[in-house]
Amino acid sequence: MNKELLTEILATFKKTQGYIEKDNRLFIETKKEIVPALLKYFKDKSFDRLAMVSCVDRINENKLEIIYILTSFCLDNPLNIILKIKISRNEPELDTVIPIFENAEPYEREIHELFGVDFIGHPRLTPLFLEREYEIPPFRKDFDMRKYSEELFDSVPFVGDEK
Amino acid sequence: MDRNKISKWLKGPAKMGHKYSLSAIYFCTGCGIIEVPPVITARWDAERFGVIPVASPRQANLFLITGYVSLKTLKAIIRTYEQMPDPKYVVGFGSCPINGGMYWDSYNTIKHLDKYIPVDGWIAGCMPRPEAIFIGVTHLWTLIDKDMAKGYVKYREKYESYRKNQEQILGKLEWKPLYPIRRRK
Image (cartoon, rainbow over all chains, first blue to last red; front, side):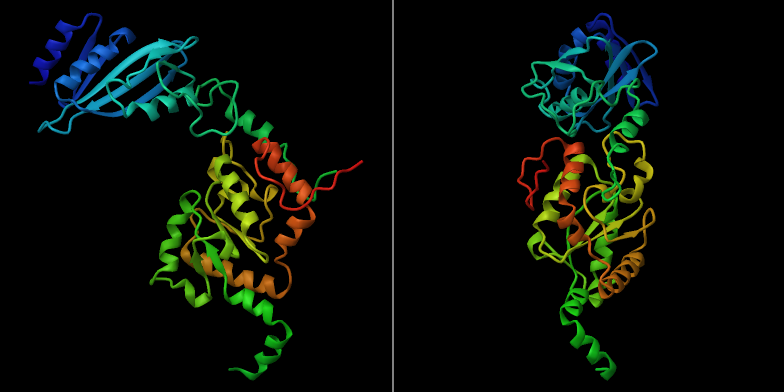
């Protein structure tokens, strides 16, 4: 059944590669324009749960990789569908998937805050966790965490020690 | 009752009251709070030592900082600390409030808690056992007896420096100063 699904996907959507691993994981690599249509397709196939939206910084390829993980509440042996897309690291822009899966909202806010990806059409991309503003979003690989924390936190004096 | 202890009672009844009725504010930061439920329930009954968790900072006089302190939590800690009535004691629990612990190079976790609020005692370890809380409490008794747990007095005296440190790390604070800040000419 899984292989049939895979062949059907590859026939329906162009510019898409896919493979199955460990019998229950279906990896799909695609372009960012196809993502909403693909998610809608899976939702109609009763993969009704968006488990996670995540991001990986591929600094060697100068790309950001966005990962959607889908699974199902109603199927007996649910497949985990892992959808990967690569977007430009310098101008990271992507359409939001909130019209299809509403629970994507906090994930997208988090990715916007920590990786600096702009989700077009997201209703509120306001800060979620962080208090300060960062020049480079802090989860990118070129953010020098050690230098930043030394500059910020070690410059505060102990009370009684100053002067 | 032991007759020898009567003179001690007469010398400082308020101090005895502070010692044996430590009301700990039930404030959860980080992972250390997982040690507190066994401490306050039947296994290690903390009420034997007079330590009882309370819900409101207005009733508390012991503040256990249990675990790493992120910037957002620091804001809440300062607000809670300023609402507590005097005398108040702060104990840093675990290695993260002492020097950052395993978050020593994190971008969002403060390293030294005593730069922002005064801390009377530390319990080292990652994680400390529940017994360590009781050792910490008995040490705090000794400090109260000897007039050494004076963090809240230090906070009042050096409030300008503390407020300056807090504003350096958090930006402008949206609440008013607790004590008046003298302007230097």
